Length: 225
Image (cartoon, rainbow, N blue to C red; front, side, top):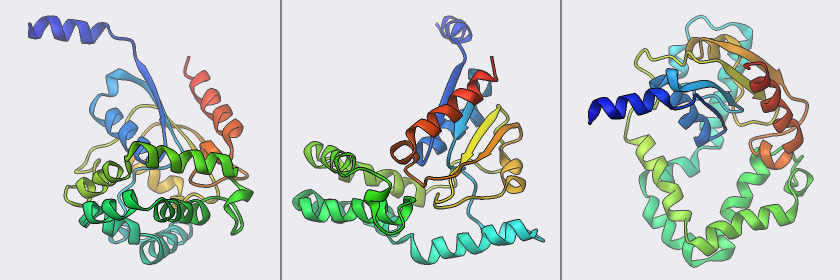
């Protein structure tokens, strides 16, 4: 039985994966563990460990990233702490209040999109309401918190000397929450084939700049044929 399962797996076609946020971590983890199964991965968030102490003798570019990392840790990680330590308590409140749920999500649209202080400059109101509604009508905001709990109570998803050796394409959007330099990315992603600095967009690139992101993904995977 095990031999047949192995034979079937060997015949499966190679996969292509694109992701951001948790999807970027999932794609990177798959590539690290099953490199033979992936043709390549395209990301617009990099799953680099966020340990500033591990960066010795930083270059000026790396120093700028460290400043960005410190700012993020100081001002933008409150949601991670409560979602990662007391997820169920928060879930009760947001599942009970549509206004509270909308505020919790809208705050991130405002902070992490390329919007100049008004999220509607980056993402249409209907798209934001559709996103909020998916959580409200499905009651899924609570389950969305549990990956943060797992992340906070386990080691970093990719580490301990592991690297991602499949071809990588990366789109760096200017208002992404963290934009590490290529010199640091190359320590984890050893086969960077495409690195594009985008003109506009933030963390929610698929909502903010869908055509630009789609074109980047197509260009990267088209070059791997």
